[in-house]
Amino acid sequence: MKQILGQSPEITHILRTIPMIAASDASVLIYGETGTGKELLAHALHSESRRHDKPLITVNCAALQTEGIEIDLFGRCNMEGEIEHHGRLLAADGGTVFLDEVDALPLSVQAKVLRFLEAGECQLQGSHKLQLANVRILAASSANLQQEVTKGHFRADLFYRLQVVPITMPALRERSEDVALLLRYFGRELAEKNAVVRYSKDAEHCLRTYKWPGNVRELANFCQRMALLNPGKMIQPEDLPPEMMPEVAASNHVFSLPPTGIKLAQVELDLIEQALEMAAGNRSRAARLLGISRDTLLYRMQKYSLSP
Image (cartoon, rainbow, N blue to C red):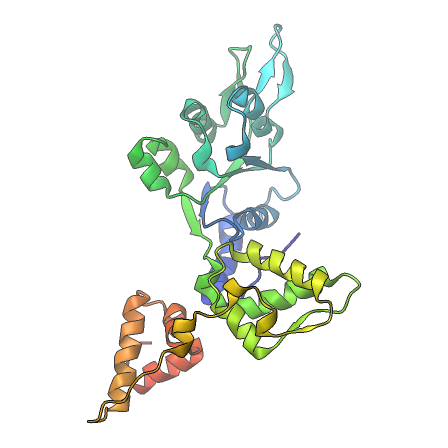
């Protein structure tokens, strides 16, 4: 199974909490943009749980056909009341169900999913008898479910029942210090029998400052393209797609020293305080805004007696 990779504080915190969350049967709601690794986290929670030897059934709620959705999820009985089709939820008995893009579940079935969550029971089409299953539910969404509840698109009771333990997978742009590690990992994984692609310091800088709208998935696809087209090559900035080059305005910006001069220490202190405020206290993000490492930021905060 693929790993969740990273050394940033955001990812380190998630990796630290996985064993504790996995030990419980509590429902987990995983937030995050497309490509951040929500399904990877669900797999990690299942594999670390006591249910690891039972099925993990993934349901892409956005791909479910509206017609027959209840049969797909729960199943169907014949005229004698015998189960002739086990739905995905019943098939996961003893294991885990991962409801990906749970916000796409039609309102018409959300009540039945809620009942299944609360009591582990459901009524199959063709029978009045309730069927029981012992299943842990993990769910994920790239949408703001609270807003979906406000709009009336998602049941509030189901939302609160799913969100017993909320986890947010950070976007790659929020943990740019992990980009180099991921480039090396995917470079080795995707090289196959070819020589591994390498990146110059300037190219790596471009890739660290790129926003990665497709997140880790986009980075993996990029690494695969580089491995196919440039085996063994040392990639330079000119080899990168144009959209991955730093913004010209940012790279050409020059600060002008006023004729009266400045107090450099005061300017540095002001910039650090502004960065921390813009990053809502997140030191890793503040360091990225200043173009320095997190350790350098912490050193300079101590220098100016700012709270670490």
